[in-house]
Length: 266
Length: 272
Image (cartoon, rainbow over all chains, first blue to last red):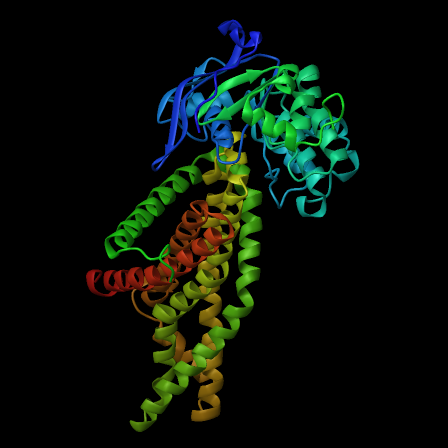
């Protein structure tokens, strides 16, 4: 398959000083399989950036590079002004203090209650227990789960687990939140709730969001810009309106397979 | 085994060396975490939970196996001793065997099968469901948070359960001695106590006892490190977790025998 012509929206040429994520010339291989090839990406502060792409195109790998869970084979990854591709453990820890991650399966610790899960990053950071409890109560209320604080992850639904995961990721008000397939496997109503939480994190906390998703309707709702990861590159970076109108064959295939409403939302 | 699962002998050897090396590094990392006071105080609750869980998980099976091991030892040795009219020496043989070798060995094998497998499965599941990644992203060191309490709890549980195995093993043997050879309980236990006399440590531990307890302590630490390493390095979904469990149990049992021999050699050949 040939690489389509590069399409980018005007906003992609934003000032570097406003960027919170900068990836340049990033290549990542697994054996002979080149997943990312000379990837270039700049994400502005306070915006939601959605990475879309077919399965196996390296979306989750890109997120892992952004949080230091993996390192690129070549190229640079700079998060909050810190180079992660050659960072020490201390530097990575520093970046992670400003970072939240919402996992696809929530990744809650099974033997801790919902409340204890949300409190975990605070307590480990040394926040006094009483203060942590107040913050956790507030955070659980924000995600509409005040009444399930004492329940364990295996006692609540998948949607609730994701919301608890969201509360844990944002409890210490990070500057950057990474979302790995936040709406996969959820019903439309819960999907909309999660979308609203992602938008709220940007508007209320001023957090930059990087969302990896297959869900076109959800992406169009939460995104300020959408990037299409295709053959190892993020060449197509568009606003939601531009995305709807794009002639790019992969974008068209996403749009045609998604159950969108008249205005582009589900 | 299918083609995907079959690997050459050099590959298997390389894997084993990598596994052993990784386990040693993890163990040393955990010991550093253990001696950091800030880490230790935060880990106390998790440590107590782990000790409780591990003792509860293993106590029943350890008791049953211990009783029968003692009874088997008594009947095996008793029949041989009867041929020489030396049944009164039975307690000496059973007490020595249980304290030095059988107690620590049986406890270790049971711990590998019950607790070691559970630890590998638990950490393996946490790995494949990204819970370990979640901890790292919260700047929580998985070694300090997960590994240290499990290794220390296994070491403590191993020593306590070895003492239990020794006691119930001697009790089982006493029943056989009384029923088959007419040796009164009091005489059996008195002879057993005399058998454990020898060079003493801390005023109350004979060499039989302290070498056996040292062995069980080392076995506990070893099973903890092997199981945690196998679990933390699980990959490939449920199949990967299964492989991690098998690897943890096999490595623990094999290493129990190898390390057990080395410790026995050290205490009974090298030490005077």
